[in-house]
Every structure is written in C-alpha cells, then in structure tokens.
Amino acid sequence: MKEYQKCAREMLDFIEKSPTCFQAVENLKADLEGQGFQELKEAGEWKIQAGGGYFVTRNDSSLIAFRLPADGSGVKGFHICASHSDSPCFKVKESPEMSVEGVYVKLNTEKYGGMILSTWMDRCLSVAGRVAVQGREGVETRLVNIDQDLLVIPSVAIHLTRGTAENGELNPQTDMLPLFGSASQEEEKKLLMERVAEAAGVKQEDILGQDLFLYVREKGRILGEGGDFVLSPRLDDLQCVYASSRAFLESMPQEYVNICAVFDNEEVGSGTKQGADSTFLEDVLWRISKGLGQGRTGYLRLTAGSFLISADNAHAMHPNHPEKSDPTNRPRVNGGIVIKFHGGQKYTTDAVSAARMRGICKAADVPCQSYANRSDIPGGSTLGNISTAHVSVSSVDIGLPQLAMHSAVETAGVKDTKYALDALKVFYSE
Image 1 (tube, one colour):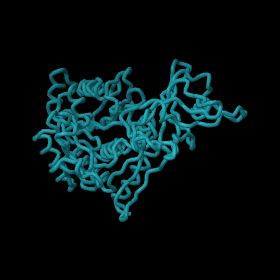
Image 2 (tube, one colour):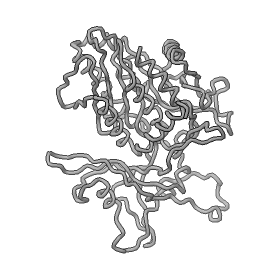
Image 3 (cartoon, helix red, strand yellow):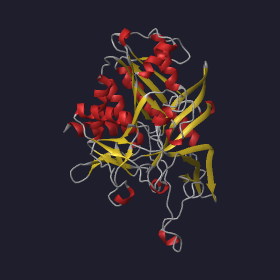
Image 4 (spheres, one colour):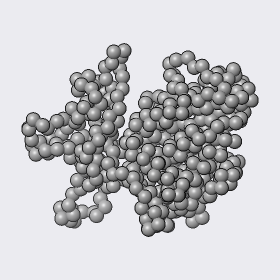
C-alpha cells in the first residue's frame, strides 16, 4: 500500500470514530496522552517546562495542544494551525419524540449549520453527542454514541410529488424529521433518552441535559477507477483536523512553540465560548507566554513573530459544473494544498503569507494551488479572519480540495491528506 493510501485510510478511521465534535476531541486527547502530553485545566494553575507537551480543552468540543522547544529562552513566537471539529448536521431537540397518527414515531430535530438537506434522506442514521449528568461533585458529562442503525429520513415517492418542482425547497421542520420507530406499545419499545442513557452508561433519571446530533452511519471508503478518491461523512473539516494533529504529533519544535488548535462551532459562526471567535486561543497563548517568564511586552513580541495556518477544506472544480469555479483559480482533487484568497478578506491570505505557505509546500515537495470565488458568487468565511481578530498574527487560509461540501457524504482526493501532513510537518519543524 502506498503511503498516501495508508494516510487516507487512517484519516477515514479517525472520522468513523468521531461522529460528533465531542468524540473528535476525545480521540485527539487519547492520541496526545498516548505520546505523553499532559492535560491542563483552564481553572487550574499551569506549570509548563521547556520541551514539554500540553493540551487544554473547552466545552469537551474544542482543544488546543502545544509543545515547547527544548530551549525555552530562545522562543521566537508561535506556529499555529487551526481547524474545526464540527460539521453540518441535525441537532436533536428536547422532548424529541413525535407521534404520527398513532402509527409512527419520529424525532424533532433542527438544522446545525448550512447543509445540503436532500443528501440526508434515505440514509442510515443514528445519534451521538454528550449528556450532562449529576455526579458526586456536581454536573459531569458523558459521551454518547448509539452504535446501531436507528433512524432514516424517508423521501416522498416521485409518484406523490408530480406537478411540483422537481427540486423544490425542503422544509427542515416538515420534510426532514427522522423516522424512529412504530407507535406500538410493546414493552421492548424504548424512548430515545432510554437508549441514550444505556449508551452513556447512566440512569435515565440522572440525565440533566443533552447535546445530541444525528450522524450518517456510512463508513468512509476509497473509490474510483484508480482508487483516486475518498468518500466520507465529515471530511469538512475532520480531514484537516486529522492532518494537522498528526503533523503536530510527529514534529518537534525548534525555535517556535507549536500549537494545534481545533475549534467547535465554525459551521454556525464561531461565536461561542469554544469557537474561534472566543478568547480561547488568546487565553492559551497568553498563559504560555507567562509560563515562559514573559510579561505583556514579551507576549506581544511573541505574537508579532508568529504565523497562523487556518486549515478548512476548499471547493474543488466540479466535474458537472466547472462553470461554478473561478476562470483562473480552479483547484482539483489530488492537486495538493489549496491557498485561499478573497478580496473582502473572508480569507486572510495576503502576498506575504501566500509566499510563506508556498515556501513550506516547496520544502515539503508538496504541490499547491489557489482558490478564489467567482466574482459573482459569494463564498463563506472560515477560521482565519475570526481568529486574527483576537490574536493579530500573520496568517494564511488553506484547505484540501473537495466536492459536495456540506453534503451528508463528501468526496475528496486520496492523495491530499498526505500532502497536508507533509507540509504541516515542515511548518511545525521550522
């Protein structure tokens, strides 16, 4: 098996084990602890040492890991790579069961993020996330994954929709609620929270709150005539999370503090305490600076010498609609890292940061390409400009090229995860 194929399969395994942001962060924690990283608590005292590796989480869904150079006295700044743990999906509402004419039971859900609704229909789904329970010392959280084929959102047969628009707009409250079971009163029938309690290993009456989401049960796979593509849920942005975290773990810092940041809630604007628009990154960088014996001036000196790579997947040219791409900036899958540009600064790349990223790719022998929106099609924003509003550092927005972004199942190139891993290892080793 070629190295890029091995890397792609390991990335798909990581995604399969990470049905929600909470499991993604838990898996990252396990990887870090397996390599000797120490967990720090935001509410506790931090004692950090040169050469040490540490991580801190917020809300169970965001994580920042850092590793210090062996010589703490000569630190020049921070090398930061940021990605996000969340993906568009459906969130389960409180009291979710709904009876339909005494025949079916469906669940009441709502949209989380911008999603291609039709792609969620007629697929095997289940529920994962976390619950809050009463522990001995207060409220505690437990991860949940109901590991079974539990739900489906059935589409309406074409025979019953004749005379309507073929691609009519779907209503998330009326068209997209998942079928949970029949309304039979048989004893073996269970309500959703009973199943959730079993999966969490707690009593149902001890559950005080929940953050539960639907996820696609389909496993990621490699496909295409020559095995050219990967097909998987949540490629945006767990593909970048995997590549950046592996590069971070496989690199040793020289003159910079290496930072691997994974934020939650990018898909809904990042405006939460655990999002990129929070103080999380700034708080961690400041405490690292204090641990290195720096005051306010020293912190500002370190941030001035820092560099941020915002890693969030990019649109590849579509095989059926190449006209949707910019005339001259048309990324392709398996074409390498995409450097993203935007005149309105929704992407933070400028001439200097683009040159820096191209130099990193060249040193790693990794191809890179450029992306810009068509001038008449507005694009989305990502982590870079949001993060730099709190921490003013030179930054570049990059991504891995993919098709069907925000679909329930997305397509990307089999080679591109390895390209990102190699480039980020060079960045973290500078």
